[in-house]
Length: 235
Ligand SMILES: Nc1ncnc2c1ncn2[C@@H]1O[C@H](COP(=O)(O)OP(=O)(O)OP(=O)(O)O)[C@@H](O)[C@H]1O
Ligand SMILES: [Mg+2]
Image (tube, rainbow, N blue to C red):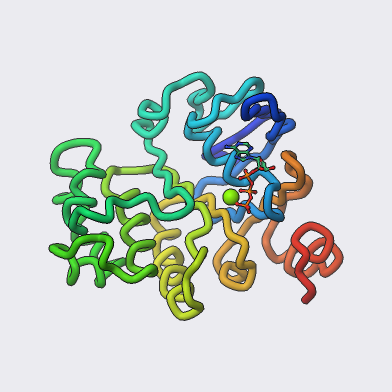
């Protein structure tokens, strides 16, 4: 398999708590993979561990052939991984334009990619001079994603983009992610299964700090028993 990202037996401790207990999965190039599981399963911890924001105590994390474990976050990001954390980490007091500018890794990144970014998120172009804190929740989420597109990234990690958004805005954000997936592989954490059923081509299912299943999305969607058991979804 042509893997863009591969975790093998990754263990992460937060304080004295053993949170990731041997996470292993491989994510294909050119795919949108959904990282799923109930609250507290370890999805966010997995993304943070990939980014080096929590240290992995054991195991290997390979990105396009490079070992990430033990490297500082800025180096991991510079290898080409964009991270969109939960709760939209944007600077609310700065304008949309300033937020995008601050996301540059190299001078000129924004100028190079602005046209493409605004084709995905036309709302942002219209709001360039507005303080980010005055945008709607959906627009703030789009700005958070747009920031990850400013530098040239070869993988995006996006954590719960639909969280706290009204259903119409969820659709809007998912439509943008749908267009994005043509350009860059995405590992997407999402609780809202409905929002991603037509979006993800693969799934990785976590339970209690481990990956319990993975495969093509259609396989999961077709299995009522798993949906109920692992996600509490009654279809
Ligand atoms: N900073 C922290 N300190 C202590 N425990 C933590 C911390 N962050 C996460 N945990 C614990 O680690 C476990 C996994 O949390 P994580 O946030 O990775 O889950 P998640 O799958 O992202 O859940 P959610 O769907 O609620 O976002 C949980 O039991 C959580 O309580
Ligand atoms: Mg989480």
